[in-house]
Image (tube, rainbow over all chains, first blue to last red; front, side, top):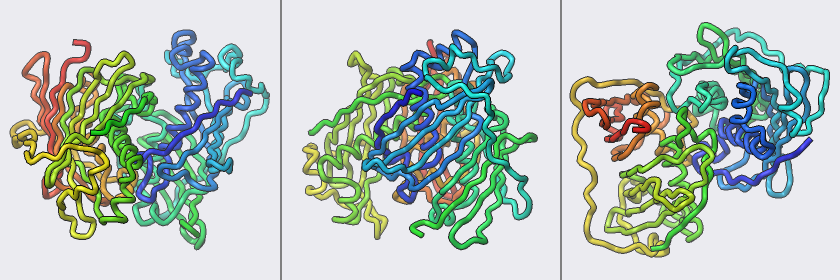
Length: 248
Length: 248
């Protein structure tokens, strides 16, 4: 298992009103790092397209947060493609502060999609060999999401041109933007996320209006839980976030 | 006039569907650079707040684009606080490619705002002295904007939590996002901007619904011109953009 590591300084435009690094930016920077490792190992997205006509898709994230990086902080980010089986690849990201303390960890699940058939394909050994990941037979079960029930917050969002990646799909981190925005300024400036489970079900394309739905449970004084869905007529993504009171 | 220069590699999440660096990201990265120079010269935003209770506000941008930076390109960005008079400070940014060719230039106009009175204040010599800018008496006249007339495109946008900066206002680059989004995928994937004039009139706060309005003149085959407004009941920003046909 090869590790790729890089220092990063949090710029002002990736910091939120609290001075914390924005969650969508955390995903962006993590994915950028895995892309850099792939380029280094001659398995870039361009290589993958030219040789197989495949693309990588993230289907799940699990994030555990001790502390969010803050504006102008120098952090160190490490990533490794841990293991893979027939259909899934598992990649870890660890964000450290300058003293080597873990700020947050992300475990992610990836699949390979065939550009032509739009279907998930088998993971060919040649594609993942350079990462020196462990081949496993086990399929790691992700978070079990439950349906949203009462007191559902809801807002529509239009996909913007700048939400679209080079692959023609909505950027991964955008879903998260649509999800948390619903919780409002007062909640978001008083709480920080502690644990996030996020699942991508179906890609969103340009020109579409998506509905972001959420239920926020604040019955526990110290810890709130929000559940999220991004939907059109179909379900596109689900998330569950545990929040703690800021400085509390 | 002190120059601050830095190399930058365009990450995937700052690249649009065409593989070009997103315009809002260009403004973000430029502003980040001026912030870094200010920190280096001990004139950071924190210093400015603690010593004067002031903040910097950009009021105008003029951008001239030869070519947009592209995904994974190593570019070099240079900035300098060129000159100032009683109320305005003028700062330049130049983006270069690796062979030293100019990709684009940004000239920007800044004012100092008093946090308490919310009014523009005189530029004190002590604040700008470390930049070694030239003191001038002339006020540089910006672009003259005209009102939007017929065939007005229009869409509403809600300010999101992640649009808000640490200073509590909508991030500068966001206005641009609202403006260009209106032109649609087909136009934006077939055209690149050549010249941009952008003026900020009044800040947008959280919780507000803004209306983005545009008129697009495509009567010239090779060159289109779009005019933009961001408004609530008041006018918040105006822009005029000259576009050229991609690869044409």
